[in-house]
Length: 350
Image 1: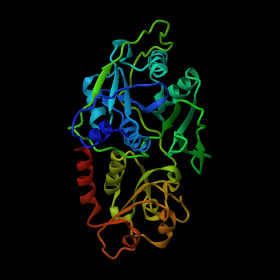
Image 2: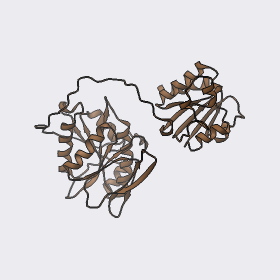
Image 3: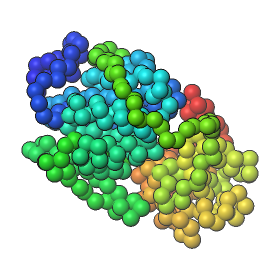
Image 4: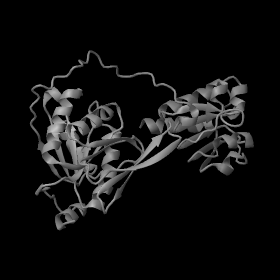
């Protein structure tokens, strides 16, 4: 790790990243856009790329296809040391063949050591085709990335059997570049530093022979999200009799929608007719292990506890300060859930 790199990390000055010598180098992030904004998974990949780069003594390069200078600056603010920008109008909307041509030509010239793509519809198409084009290997749907620093190889954690188990796979030192797709939501967002500065290089691309085979006729702004089975849900908002009535239960549904989570309930919610039995959590219902479980108006009887004991983080909202649910909750709010939930939704919308 040279002095310029250390100065850049300390924010002392802008450093122009020099690419010298032969060989594969640096951590590259393929940025994705959602409309006119960067996809959250892009920022999460930058966060992980920074950690990998600090171990390897490398730089973090970002590639933005079809974006603009504003989005390129956002990549820099979130950790990119240099941004390569394809601003050709033909690349504004995603199309497989032009994107593969643009990225493939760039990577063939720049020889990245590691390439990170999102485990999304776009990244899932791009990564294996880039690997084939570059005579490399792609590992997909990774939920963990570490380094064998002595070999400069990625060690990837990948879910198998529909997420019930994980396997750890390491790249061979002979494979270059090492291409992976990263599942959204596993690495967290980096700190946004508006004082970071770096170079944005606009890249010209020859798209002859790379005409898209699929033409976009229409874009649907909103589509109904398919429900996720409770045992596989990452966020669950659950209701009990303490919600009082159907109007109170409707607030639980609104909070779940605001969090992109699933709605569930205790036996009491089923008995009240607010929810079907397949959405019941606890003995006689589903056993869940979400990242976040919000219990609204649930007393927390032992039957319910058995269903949520593997949840990573439990938030309980109940008027009764002696409710058993508070003994197992990571955060407890003694209040009427009908008053708390609208405030949470308002904060999320803000």
